[in-house]
Length: 210
Length: 288
Image (cartoon, rainbow over all chains, first blue to last red; front, side, top):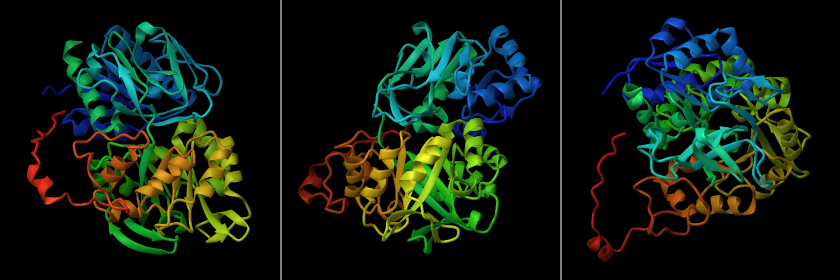
């Protein structure tokens, strides 16, 4: 098993310990939770964890100069990165959560509030099955319509060509996006038991290929 | 399609998981970390860890306990008890919590709830309401002072949603540990007032209680504590039975499909003739 240098980007908010526990459970040993440029530059795979309001997250990223550091590592050096929940939403052009705030603009799109038909509660909380693009390496170990844990009030709207999975919640919700070395999932793989672990394994297995 | 959630609540007192009866009597069950590990293996959908001694003793959350309990949790973990500052929430997120439950803050420090929702997002904030059935109807109950407040749970729920809660956890104090079933009237009243998901708690004693609450209310999740500790194979057996009526996540080999249960939802032993004809299937351990 290859042991890539994994860095979980620490931007203050985010369930970093949960993400680290899940990755450790897969047997990876070189994991760091860090906001330092040297660690991030040395990473072979990056995780941008979730749980947080967009505004606070985007602000924290900028205060720690993580936007510049990540732009270099992700856009220029093309290191693989997986954004989880709000970590994925940060990759957008802009979000409407608590007013308009701009994101990293890696995958053009807008993050808007969920607006399902009546009888659907917002936030969208719980286990939902996703319809993933089977050909994508991220879903190579997962059966069609596998369950993942969702917990969000806002969702990513972008061009269909970037969407690699969606789920149904009284409306079509973007569940996963990809563009070259950049991956984002709206659900929480670190909290989705075996399906989540399989997805993380696929992501890290692909590190060599990038 | 979104699945109905089956949640286990672990009530922790002085670092030990306890069985709670009516918020008055407590019997020890065991270590939080072991309970979390087992519930995970049985395929629970979510775990709520409530430390009832922290607030009572005026302590901050027991971070070391949360850290050790969360280690084996591959499902979402909501942590409550002793949270009085935004820094507590931040530290809990670094100890393995995925959401936080606010009870005393929901009653007496609503600005903390709003600020937390602003920083961590409303989806991260669960407002926990305790309700006691009085002669005047359901009333909010302050467990810390053991005092009934003159407010209806449904009204408080609506207020807490306005303040930024992403979920409401409604606990029935009088049904707690009673095995009499969920308080349908209470849960229905809360569900009718909010648009955020509602988790109901208190009174689960068998599978019919779960079916009843899903059938008669819009609760998005049903939670139980003692039921999961003291009934064998409880998580998978109730999921097997609920899955016949409602969508639930039930992705295990030991799914009990085609198995018979008695009126209390307990497994009935198969007939000897049936056992004789059974073919055993070898299941290789899944390598992820």
